Every structure is written in structure tokens, then in C-alpha cells.
Length: 155
Ligand code: HEC
Ligand code: HEC
Ligand code: HEC
Image (cartoon, rainbow, N blue to C red):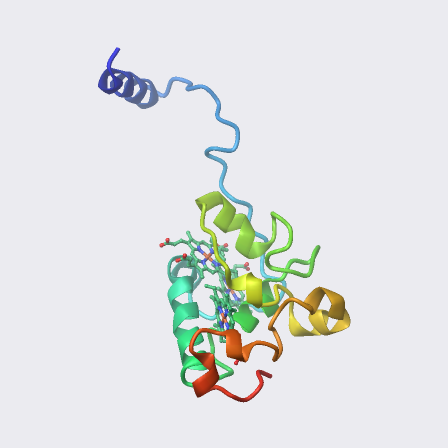
């Protein structure tokens, strides 16, 4: 049977509502933990699902190139509200907010190579876990294009 014929057969089965072999996990929606803080997100939830990467990118540029902090779409803000009740982090366990969804959609981000995955207070309370992150000072110099425009230490 040609690939096309197989596809046609499968499509027919599906359209008839006949059972197709179970594929564990393949169609299961990700379980996304509800925000621990806040009544609402910084934008409409539907917009956040689609556009959060653009908001973050914009804020990153504003901060790293323009030295502007306290932005509405700050990554620190995301972490403050979305850190898991169980782990205190957005990206430590597979069920944590940022990871749950990205694993499902096969998105990989490097943000947490540098940024802490926990709110600043939690990081301060556990300094050893924070050693490798730049939630505070440390590596303004290693941030892309950061050294010239934002010499002062991050708050
Ligand atoms: C003031 C607290 C708060 C801040 C700050 C915040 N969020 Fe949210 N976010 C929420 C709430 C509340 C929802 C609605 C769904 C829920 O209750 O979890 C939500 C929903 C979302 C959703 C949709 C989740 C879903 O169920 O599909 C995404 C994605 C998201 N936020 C990403 C972010 C990102 C990225 C940032 C930082 C730029 C951020 N949020 C900042 C509170 C917040
Ligand atoms: C090489 C280290 C590094 C990586 C990787 C990195 N950042 Fe940053 N980022 C920094 C530094 C340093 C700052 C400046 C902090 C400051 O001055 O407040 C910063 C600032 C930011 C800001 C503005 C401050 C805030 O909390 O909102 C955002 C937003 C941001 N980064 C998002 C991201 C995102 C999203 C990714 C992944 C796509 C990422 N960063 C990856 C080092 C990094
Ligand atoms: C509701 C599901 C969902 C949640 C929750 C979520 N993301 Fe995403 N994220 C996605 C999807 C889907 C993409 C890929 C979008 C695309 O490629 O157009 C993405 C892409 C990104 C990207 C761009 C990656 C790239 O290589 O272009 C960044 C940065 C990012 N997310 C950061 C975060 C952060 C930080 C959090 C937690 C605060 C988070 N996301 C939570 C679904 C989610």
C-alpha cells in the first residue's frame, strides 16, 4: 500500500470515528498550573499564549539596550506570579509553568541558563541555588550588548 493510500485509510477511519491505536501522551494537552499570584495576567490570557515570547523579547531589548526596568512584561514578573506552589520555580520540574507547555510543544529556551527560575525572595533565601544565575548582578557584562548601555547592577 502506498503512503498516500495508508493516509487515506487512516483519514477515513478517523472521519468515521473508528478507534485508532492509542498513542499515550501524543494527544494529551499539557497540564498548566494556575498562577499562584494575581487575578489576571499582564495581557489577556489568550494573547499571552500566543505572544508572550514577543513581549519578553521586547522587554529584554528595552532593559538590556535601553536600561529600562520595571517593565510590565518583565521576566521577573512572570516568575513572581507563575512559580509553582510545589517547587517555587517556573522551570525546575517537568510540570512547572514554562516547562510544561514547552515540553509539549518541543520549544527549547536558554533563558534560565542565566535567569533564576524562582522569585528573587526565594533565590535570596537559598543562595547556593542562585550561584549560577544572574537574577542579580553578576553578568551584566555577559549579556548580549549589555555592557555599554546598562553598566549599573540589576536590582
Ligand atoms: C500578576 C500576576 C501575573 C504576572 C506578572 C504574569 N502572569 Fe501570566 N497569568 C496570570 C494569570 C492569573 C493567568 C490566567 C490563568 C491562570 O490563572 O493561571 C495567566 C496566564 C498566562 C498564560 C496562559 C496560561 C494558560 O493556561 O494557557 C501564559 C502563557 C502566561 N500567563 C505567561 C506569562 C508570562 C510570560 C509573563 C511575564 C511576561 C506573565 N505571564 C506574567 C498571572 C500573571
Ligand atoms: C547570557 C545570559 C542571558 C541569557 C541566556 C538570557 N538573558 Fe535575559 N538578561 C540577562 C541580563 C544580564 C539582563 C539584564 C538584567 C538587568 O539589567 O536588570 C537580562 C534582562 C532580561 C530582561 C529584562 C529584565 C526582566 O526581568 O524583565 C528580560 C525580559 C529578559 N532578560 C528575558 C530573557 C529571555 C526571554 C531569555 C531567553 C530567550 C533571556 N533573557 C536569556 C542575561 C541573559
Ligand atoms: C500555554 C503554553 C506556554 C506557556 C505556559 C509558556 N510558553 Fe513559552 N512558548 C510556547 C509556545 C507554543 C512557543 C513557541 C511559539 C512559536 O514558535 O511561535 C513558546 C515560545 C517561547 C519563547 C521563544 C522561543 C524561541 O526559540 O523562539 C520564549 C522565550 C518563551 N516561550 C518563554 C516562556 C517563559 C519564560 C515562560 C514561563 C514564564 C513560558 N514561555 C510559558 C508556549 C508556552
